Length: 149
Image (cartoon, rainbow, N blue to C red; front, side, top):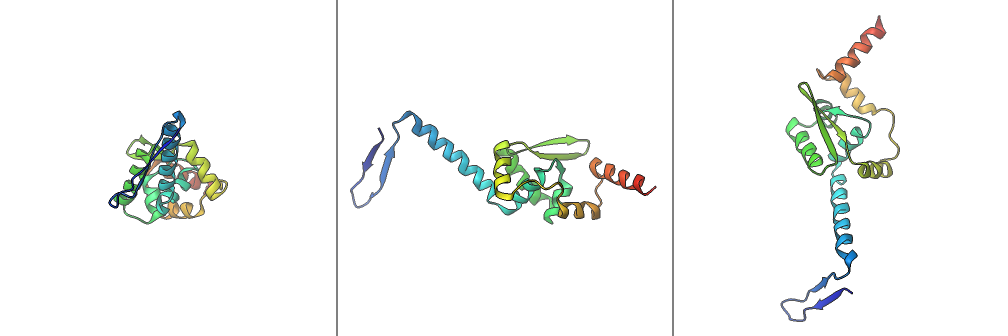
């Protein structure tokens, strides 16, 4: 049974609840974990990053172009998401690619943003105008060149 201690002094008019049930601590930890996830999603730029990453892995230069923010700012947001275990990074040559790693967050994104569109038109636009030397862009440029031949 949960014990409630009431402090009636004028200086300390607080209520202290002490969990005694076995499930109380686990439930509190679960709520805390979910609250942290919602905090991650409550930031507009992180939400944009996650929306892009739910389509597939992207390099930092693509995310910089999309967000129109400097690299240190984008890296800071990616670090927060990575430390929370929401995304993972993979180094390929000189490029670092990020991808979504948390199925629970992916589900939350689907509920909040709807189903994943095949392509992000805004990101595609920025990819077409930036000078990016990542393998993904070089592949795409090669495909475009062969399509023109």
